[in-house]
Length: 172
Ligand SMILES: [Zn+2]
Image 1 (tube, rainbow, N blue to C red):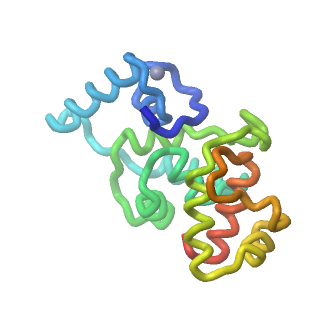
Image 2: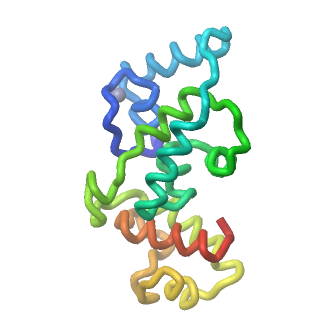
């Protein structure tokens, strides 16, 4: 399994923990039960208010919308729709996954290494319109420090810089 992993305060056996990337028996079971119930119409969608408040909190702490979407394993456009108040109801699993996000900078520190792939994909998209030097400048790092193709991991702080730069350059 190569599902993205992230820090999660929720215990095993919860949908939030599964959404955070855990594939243990308990988490998979919680996910299966939730899916079955949702398909059977036993789970009602919830108000997006709690998720929107938490997104606001995370953004105030420097998270980009893309980082929130990636870390919560929720669609990027869904997160924006919640921010803009375009959704009246959301699936409880989406609300849970967003609300379970903890500030990485506090939990693991900015030097924690995470998989580089999302960051490299973002740089690749930026490269369509910008040079490496321009991107590095937008990220506030030297061109040498900008993650390179083939790199396996990046620091959380670097990933966040690239995400913030991408959002500023409006390609996100
Ligand atoms: Zn688990």
